[in-house]
Length: 396
Image: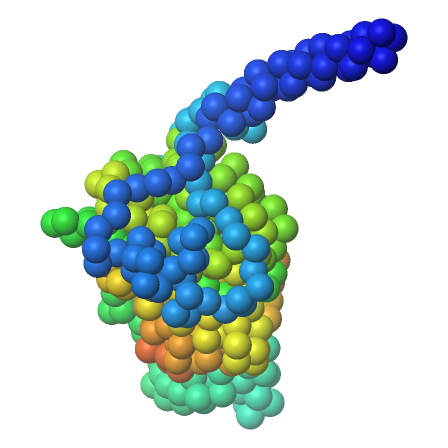
């Protein structure tokens, strides 16, 4: 009899505990929805011929042992996000002008150094050597340095007088030519007739890709774009949550996996699928950082792009580079360009370096424009690159 009472008591306690946990579980999940968008026969993730039970692509899966995952869409405007109220990003127009003082300070050595040298009473061979050294230290590159020095030599000889005003005007004109204002720096983010524009962000570890995607989301929201973020960096702990938090701050949803190490191509595919179904303007895909000399990781990046293109073209591939890496950034850029056809550069950490000349070196080497620059840690410190404003900041 006592044993029977004990069993009944255990059952009652168990039911009470389960009953208490259910509301907590439901509350934790109420602002997250599993993405189960419509499928069709031609859908590469929906077809049983090339996927497993979790929707992970088998034909190009990087790791057969990767854990199964559920792809979910986290709404950017829910009450349970870490940010309680939506923020209003600063207007895009004039951002670089507002940040000019910061840029001028960071590149002080280049602009002021050149002005001082060219304003010298006597410009002999030793001065020209100093000018060359200043340009090389700013990572402008050997070819561009020689080209600029030759032009400056000729103009100084013809100029006759070297007042600071004349020197500054001459230097400004030649630097603007070198930075090349004729390059198209606009982002390809216009929605197509039947699908959104797709933008991928790539780069090595530690350059700030996820932060750049979050800041770029603010730029697009400020331009009244309807966007979705795709957290395809599935290998770095908390990368998806970091991206979702950036999106939440401006009311942008994030498509992510709930399992670390999930197939990034599947997540990217689902993000684009959600963008098509939701008729948004732009889908932005954050990718995992990778070393440019790791062949397997670079191949995986190419795979992500190919999987996306099963349902939509990739309109923009932005390579994020750290300005402090100097010429090493050129090596990175060349490898990434071979794998995913880079369409633009985002240059970060220009606020703490005198390496602004890397803008010139990258563009000359790849023929790809610098489209955005990061000038600080602030949420709105990402600005569209403008050649004339950039040079004016160097010479301030």
